[in-house]
Length: 526
Length: 94
Image (cartoon, rainbow over all chains, first blue to last red; front, side, top):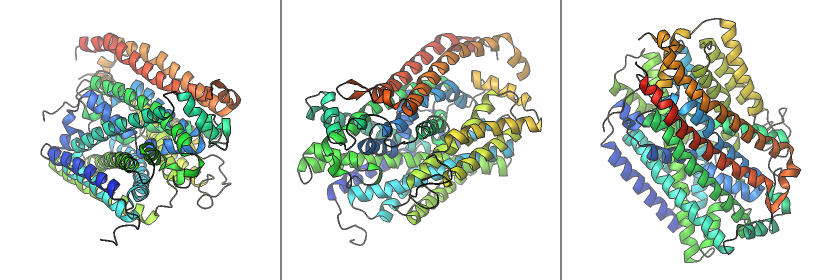
């Protein structure tokens, strides 16, 4: 076995990881008995309750980037690390006010159902499916690289092995348990993560006689930036970087396909509304705890842990758990480190499963059934293609994550995913639902411009051009959203006006359906 | 179904108008609150760095206020639509 393991394999975290795999695969086995129709496979039979879906939405949203990434960035760069988090939280306002109920009312399985409803279906659906697959692809590869790096750092497994185990579990959930397994894995992870951050935050406060201001004092005294540690400007040196990154996260989250398809899993639009209500309760709570944990990392770990916490500070939260438990080498420290590592592992597993099922829907339901088969494929075929698509997408992501290697610039991929979601998916989806004149060429040109602008500008940005971690690209900002989002909207409008075609006839139908829920897909008794 | 007729009907307009009455003010509140936060975090870093009490800065107060904002907006929206929009949808004869 020794060729599988890195030199410093850690038995306890490995055991907790094994327990997480056992629990989640148990859920998958239970779900597999209840998953056969397409509605069950892609939407869990639309039988998830608002509270359950709220937890699952929160779970989809609280990725490893949100838990390990945000606390790590606060540990390293202070307040700016918190900006991406609260921007993504704020995205639930446009999701609730503009998208959630209308998605449930007028869609079946995918984001493209809604985006292409009133348009010339095959080209518009293809464009929306490409938007979905691009976002999911980049985000999935980023999460897989993060998974490999984190599992290696936490349990001592070698990077490629860690990626294969994560990818294998992810595929098992989706293949056998479909959306039902994915949802319950997500709910389990959300409950574990919310409990984990509560315990950590209370424990941190306990170390400082339950006075949050004592935590801040200690953090400031252990930062080389002193009082500036609590203020903006350490990570986003240019003011426009703050704004552009904030915009990418607030509108990008609202265009993430794996979050939008969660609204198909509840029985009606009121339940979709209720899901968002629960989700913001949990995510808001999570972010209050995240601030305490991030600042607590600085206060208790200090500059000494900066190297050990790794790039982006990703391992800061587990290291904090170790310190809280009593420190390295103590039983308490080892146990709490292993528990929080296990929670982080569950977090990654659940999010990648959600990504794969949304990609599977885009390939099977959008491309295969509707574009290639002209909506003539039967349900069982659609599920079969969905499973094949999941394996293909999953395998490609596993291989690319291994080839890219753990040194790969993940920030580039995450920035790209959010920028494409905000600049290509969000404008086309919003205008399809709300602008009477919008038409097919507007959607095609809008998605194309949003996509190309995001990719081009990120390649030209300082973190990529002309090589990894170099400075001084031709495009000065870390994230292109402030340019690419307006470009996406302008292209939708210009494309619409230039073509003069009208989709008003179907718009009336979409409007009545999306506002009232008339004729919406009904729940299946499962 | 004659979608054009339904879309143009008085009853349907009541539904969309009721929804607009709750969405528009909340959307404006969101744009001002969140947009204000981003602009201050970008351009008023001196103000954001001010300490309110023992190292707790305006920046963190503003960021944490966004949690309150999402809770507040979600609460108002869900409560209001339940009493103003939903009954109008139920009254629609489709």
